[in-house]
Length: 247
Image 1 (cartoon, rainbow, N blue to C red):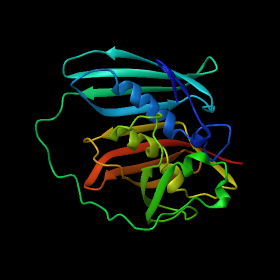
Image 2: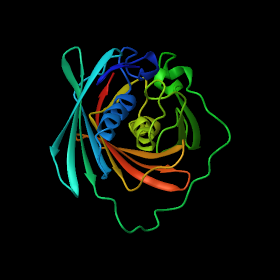
Image 3: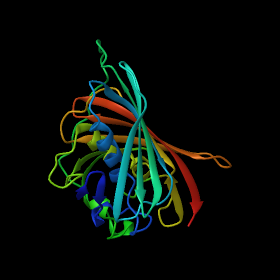
Image 4: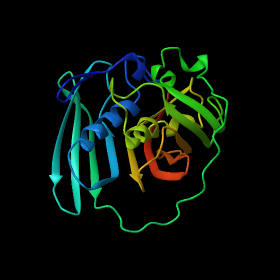
């Protein structure tokens, strides 16, 4: 819910899988992108990186934006998300002049007919999972390994407002480590510290395909990487660095 210029109230529909008091990072990442998109320009967003500085509470949020590097062909934007007087997320996005040429980007993937709902093992309070429609093309909620799932937002990011195509992508891009999990949800944490999404073009329609895989290295770190598509083919690539630890 929008409370005023740059001020928002989060709802329980944003709660994540690790703690019901904290948001899944997808909705607040998309909120940062929304505020950056509202900064008028003829340029298009080519990349956004969100740094997750700490848990995002389900409460009142404040977003501030600035232009860090202005330009006619490329510019760098920045946004900060604050809660209770502290910064919880920071984002930077490059906007570029639209490309005058294009190439083929890949083949579309079929949309399954059957909807799948989150299992009880992931928690009834996992509000975010119930705010998105899920249709698995490969894998499943409790399956481990690479997976692909079609997604569609059930409710708007901001009440009374249709989300932009790029906002739809950001809402689900942060789920790459979840859908392609390689560890037991009950025994391990695998939480991302950031999210980077590179866009190749503007998405079309309500459906976003998240095709993801997770890699872990003992003594190192984790990486979840994904390809995000609309019903005509790929539109973006995502990446998340993972903190992995026993519960």
